[in-house]
Amino acid sequence: MPGVRVGMGDMVGSAGRNQIGAALGGCSSVAIWDEGYLAYDLGGAHPMHPVRWELTIALADSLGVLDQLPMVRPAAASDAQLCQIHDPAYVAAVRAASGQPDYQGFGLGTPDNPVFAAMHASAALIAGGSIRAAELIADGAVTHAVNIAGGLHHAMRGCASGFCVYNDAALAISTLLGRGIERVAYLDVDVHHGDGVQAAFYDDPRVLTISVHESPYTLFPGTGYPEEVGAGAAAGTAVNVALPAGTDDDGWLRAFHAVVPGVLRAFRPDVLVMQCGCDTHREDPLANLLLSVDCQRASYLAGHELAHELCGGRLLALGGGGYGLVRVVPRAWTHLMAVVAGSPVDPTREIPAAWRADAGRRGLRDVPATSMTDGAELTVRPWQPGGSDAVDRAIAASRAAVFPLHGLDPDDPRD
Image (cartoon, rainbow, N blue to C red; front, side, top):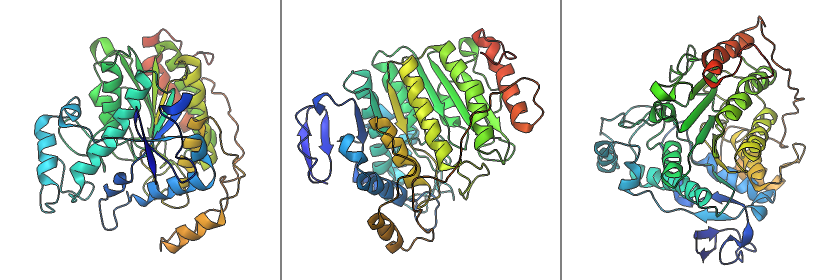
């Protein structure tokens, strides 16, 4: 993609969009993207294949989303930046291990996190993308930013975990705090618990982490119980909604609206960081929730609305998990990018034939979807105390654990 040099970094876009101007020209939304992200390739039949990002960018472009969403090229995170969250010994190990396929240690060299040639360079570039997004928002240059390659939320201070080498989400939050943002809320709608981000800020009262995920009884990483609420002065700033396997659109939306808005309003964040993993989809091969792409789109719209209600619109959106490489991820994250751009894509919009043909030529097993919807009819059925199904019990457990710590009534559905 041709690009032009601007004050905030390299702007990139397709031909016909490269005359953006000297400094974003008043645009309030940007995407952070670099084709170097595609080198984050765990190889072989690993489910986290970078083609999902490539297909997403191509689909967003074909639907005109990128016409309204300038793209900023990031720089790789420096070791000093990475060590805001990660142990220096771990960063050194990642750098040293890159390209040594037999290396084992620090969570590397496992089936989940195999060593690959560009491991440090590509992971640092993705981390740099989320850091850049945070800088632009904190400095007031933009209101919304999205990094679809980000959201690598399992990486811990001293080890890789769950396909994640560097925790770009935690690094973005640390960057926001370092640039004077006083209160950051992190909302994670990935099917897996956002354990690495929760761990990074478990005792920090400036950061609220909310994770809506499949129950740790049935899914990696085995954490994210409602009783995990934060430590010390930060008690109440870790919120976990652990949903039973088989939860569908109706149950997921009921749980989201029963817990997330109330806690966010009580916390009063200055910026909302949202991890938008789309492995909650009913076709995802690694998990057990039953959401439609329409429900995922609704979650992005809800996060956008809450950012405008509570944070002056300041929203940093990240990707995350999602292993339906052709049928799910490109649609979900094209919807995400369109929401960030302020021009949501009509769910009934047909997917261009040229994009479908290109996806088919790649030899991937999935047959591309024909439209941007799964045809789901969404309703939000308000939660009421005393419900007997498994989703209602999960909601009640989360509310009971954290609502009193925010001065909210766990039994009052108005809170």
